[in-house]
Amino acid sequence: MRTPWGDLAVLDAHVHFFSHEFFRSLVGQESEMPATAAKVGWTLPGVDPNGLAETWTLELNRHGVAKAALIASVPGDERSVLAAQAAYPDRFHAYAMLNPTAENATVAPGLKAICLFPAMHRYSMHDPRVDAVIQQAAAQRMAVFVHCGVLTVGIRKRLGLPSPFDMRFSNPLDLHAIALRYPRTPFLVPHFGAGHLREALMLADLCPNVYLDTSSSNSWMRYEALDLKAVFRRALDVAGAGRLLFGTDSSFFPRGWVADVYQTQARALEEVGISAPDARRIFGENLQRLFS
Image (cartoon, rainbow, N blue to C red; front, side):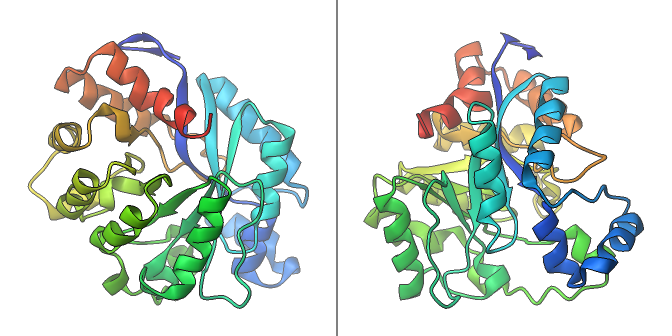
């Protein structure tokens, strides 16, 4: 992709793979899925996840994006992202949401990362069941993605579905002892901690295996007297360019890849004055290195 630093291989560390199974889990009745998709203005994906994988491949090609981490966004949907990764191994990394409190919670082989949402599923990161799945992930050399801070699911709001999340379990500092216990396991904190920037930076300062994902519109900044340039300056000062992962939080079609998120972040980093080597790290090399 052509960038302010020349041609870079851009890798997106945060793309939601809203599969047929994702829609079915929200709606319940298969027969109601087309009407629900039409209601929210989204394209309903087919049953075969390879079709959605092809759509994402074409979309990334259109924008010049080399690779993306695809997140299965409901527990039990590992099959969809693993199928996409198998079909296009040079284009996708497979991540999947896992609820450690579910009966017989197991890490699916072949994933590059498990995704934990403590506030969504209402558990503490210090629960022994969490440690059990992190042990499984560590044994398979996977990363552990942990959503901290403010959590909203836009489609649930639009459909009038309840979101009984519990922010008591959203503090990045809850990862401190766990990240130290698994020093060879990368821990990924999206959205700069989503409103817990100070805590996310403290965690990253103390744990060199913690990475910050830059994804989303970062609307959490309205809670802070900061702009995106200031956020990047603080993150670069504490974590360095080697532990920042560019992401967009792209998700559904027909919107597709959210290019304006990339443009906003690139502009902020250009104004901060980062070097071309640091831009290469943030926009792609760090993610590639994690799973090489």
